Image 1 (cartoon, rainbow, N blue to C red):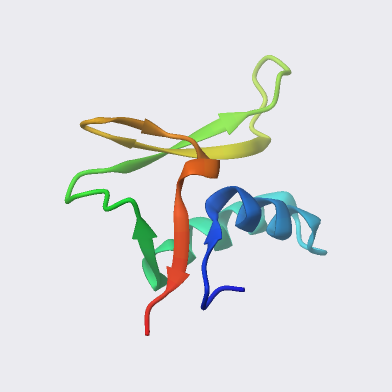
Image 2 (cartoon, one colour; image 1 turned 180 degrees about the vertical axis):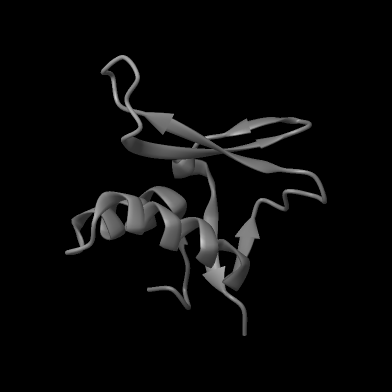
Length: 84
């Protein structure tokens, strides 16, 4: 699946379903992004924006977006593929 590619949203769903603490899953996702070829090309300047749960003051990440100078990409719009 990773060789053919998957959306960032699918990776997030898979990691949150894994038997890991939620914070460890988020850390693994963000640390592992450098291992993937990301489409569309994000350019040299981008950063992750974390989407938190609905509770006030919540630090429970439920999704990740990627912010670029051209706009913000939802996790379902970001495609990840292992580099060959």
